[in-house]
Image (cartoon, rainbow, N blue to C red; front, side):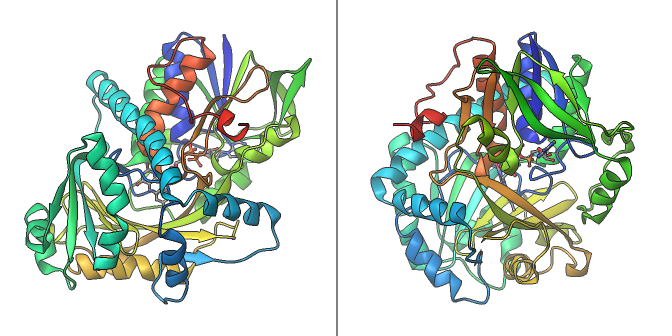
Length: 451
Ligand SMILES: Cc1cc2nc3c(=O)[nH]c(=O)nc-3n(C[C@H](O)[C@H](O)[C@H](O)COP(=O)(O)OP(=O)(O)OC[C@H]3O[C@@H](n4cnc5c(N)ncnc54)[C@H](O)[C@@H]3O)c2cc1C
């Protein structure tokens, strides 16, 4: 079966891998000159199925209002004259009650746990280094934040997920670098089975595995539209991005310190006239840009981009640095260790579609690092990045059938796409090739918006 995967972020490349495993002839189309140069590039790297939580949660609206008034805040909101933004917010507010929260969290955990299982099975076959670490520590700065975490803790308890509640000393036993912190946590939660790793580095290695199996990657190529006939998608209209423009985009991006090998990037394409690539099946994995592509075919996806930021710094003092992944629950900012580097990532900025860096967000990242690990890295060495999370209001991704023949979705992974990538890729590849997925997909497809 000839399949085309649109988008070479972690979701698209994972889908391509499992489609090739199912014997498909796979081509991946990507606008950038390599894989994982969009939202998958500089994320926090956390794979914490026990922690995956919808942002729509009880108490969140009040907490967000409080944040909006603070100078150091993980939330930035720019109200816009954009009906899609207000529709998204209204839907999000409806999902904040306890019953909806529990349903949404369980759906997200179902795919996230399955994804971790797929990742471990994959790793057993393909051993490569991607800055992996084990364990995940949540830090709370106030009793109010501990109280807000209770519904999530109840879900963990009910699901039998291993976790430990900690005091400040116990937090420092798990992360000895916290002994030098400027603030003390009032409490912590430790999830020993969760893990972290560099998503972009993993995706680049996964690309190599895909290519060895015959998957074709077409870079510097923009997807313009889907082609359909008789109610079935038959192909994709594409155009090569003029080489210079693609290069300029990459140079403008302030890349994390970790280097891209020349082999990770493609040579610019030459012919820039639009043309059609035919396919039996097309999988949409364009991250935040997926909704606009499928809308002309009547497929409505409530996706909204929520910007986030990260800073990547080389570690200068091993003893005073984090060992694995942590989350400052009060400022919703993660600090993750990737080998010789650490990354601080967070902030939710709603209402701004442009990928420009915002000073206020960068200051919050650096404050969080300075509060917890003031001696781990040199602030002036920070390399900043901004990405756009493909968020749906209720949290769980949209996998599988689009409602149009031959068109499949793998979108809406929001703030936990890396954690859900391998499982989502496998489920979608199973559906495309008419195999029964290993997990129940109730609530993980577009059908949940049609009820
Ligand atoms: C600050 C931050 C921290 C995060 N931390 C975590 C974390 O700790 N754990 C976790 O699991 N997740 C995390 N995430 C979320 C995670 O990064 C995303 O969910 C994930 O990267 C989404 O992957 P994707 O493949 O869907 O999108 P992308 O990586 O954006 O891939 C989509 C690709 O489609 C391409 N594309 C788009 N339009 C076109 C077009 N018209 N033609 C051709 N190509 C096109 C883009 O160039 C891009 O490469 C974080 C996100 C942010 C912003």
